Amino acid sequence: MEAEEPTVHKVEARRGFFPVVTGDEVSLVQAGATFCLSRGDLRLTQAGARLSMAGGNLSIREGGSLLTLACCDASIEEGGSLLLLAGRDVSISEGGAAVVAARQVRAERSFLGFVLGGKIDVADDSILLIGSGQAAIFGAVAGLVCAMAGRLFAGRRRP
Image (cartoon, rainbow, N blue to C red):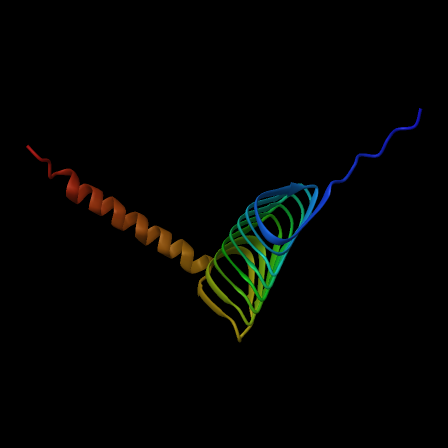
């Protein structure tokens, strides 16, 4: 008896708004979605989603996502994300992200807010507000301020 190959569910959603789009490989083209979930690769082309999750690679071209999670690599070209987390590498070209966390981050002609990564390569024509070193300092100072504020207000109790 011959073993059957598993069926791969490729989903392409075009021109419209979809509450949830799921599949093994998902493409969202000129459309919007609340949740866009893929077990494999996920591609957003001139599209947007509130939550984008890919079990494989994720690419955004001329679109955006509020919360973007990729198990492997993520790339953004002429688009953006509020929070971008990737298991491996991130590359951003002519786009932006407020918060990025990945093993390696590369950016060209882009704007990055807060970046955590093992290797950060930002071209001269890009803007990086806070890198890994500054993030560690920021976290230490914020923790110290919160601890001092907690001690200051702990003594004040209402009768």
